[in-house]
Length: 481
Ligand code: ADP
Image 1 (cartoon, protein in one colour):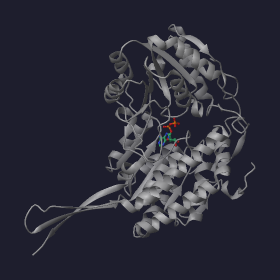
Image 2 (spheres, rainbow, N blue to C red):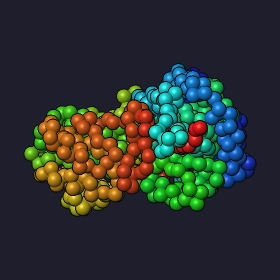
Image 3 (cartoon, rainbow, N blue to C red):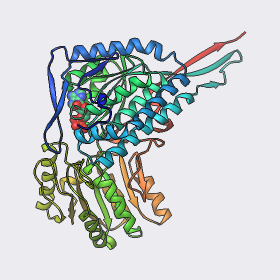
Image 4 (cartoon, rainbow, N blue to C red):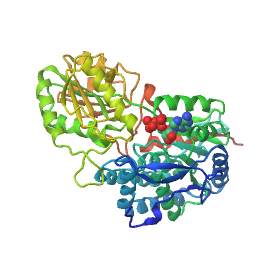
């Protein structure tokens, strides 16, 4: 591994400011999904180490919350600067463990860092309130205080940004955190901790542990010291974590699965729609929770859209993300490849046709694929594929497509391309989703509230709303003479 700053590559966990192995000495291998080579190992920690990390976070919070908002802001801003200064190294580490093309990894580092910058700024704007008293001698004052020790569990598809948008908000307001990154992508997390320490984040404020997901997760949910759990991952695991958090009545934020519809109306700019579909569908090889999962194209422009999409898909270059010009890297593992294959076989058996790609290429690579004439009962209309598969469905009326788009348990991102303003407003209001991209396929940024409805989750990340998830409201009732 060719890092300019080799100290960013750590293979130990970070607890209370110390780099540690598991008590048992056991480790887990971490592999490069492009080659299946072992990159290194991480400690296999469990319940005891998790408990110690939580206790360290509890102690550290006493001082951290007492710092002024400006002091915390300055430290977070320094963290942001260090992440950007080390952007190339962080991107390389990310590509090696996750697989996305290096240019995309650089983009993720900048995107991830933007949350640190944003929350460094927002730290100073946690305003309380003074309300009219209910009696002549009473005054009501509302304080917003950090919720306390928080826990975060993050996924492998954005190994950097899913951490910064949680930790940035938590640390900004005076919370501390115990984080469990995905076992597949721990090195991006450790590298962030190296830079956090360099930025001046005190020992115990941010702790990172890897190991047995269930043992660590159970302790994070059940330990009463932890007051909030924030999770990004599948709906199935998210629901389990919520159940486990119930006994200690923890606040939870859940960013779960999606099944994004991408709707192209007959008055849309087709070239723009194709461009939007390409970024929405094929970014990170289709492994993002806001990826277009179902493309709905109106009958009059259906054939033209599929033809244009075929041309654009033909220009993608598959390969190891570290190679120049590659735009589609590997899937995260063999299971992900098998799921794409299953979705294709199911749709084809029900009458869909393969308009492009369709094949596994060996290793964890899969051809970017387009399925045309996909019937409504295909599994892919219900389940998230999480791969470079674009199933294109045909629809006729606005009412029909709204019904189809909403016919899912999920409600994270949705997209529509149209020009008629009334149509845009009406359809946007009808879509049961937390986010609607209108004539754009790229909607995530630190200034906007990211999150879903229905089985896609609870809470928002980023924006002025994202900070609220880490705050408690306390009201002071003042009696005056
Ligand atoms: P995906 O792997 O599709 O992103 P998962 O929900 O399986 O979604 O994983 C997201 C995160 O949740 C990862 O960090 C994973 O290790 C963690 N995880 C998986 N199972 C559990 C569990 N039972 N308890 C706590 N965390 C878990």
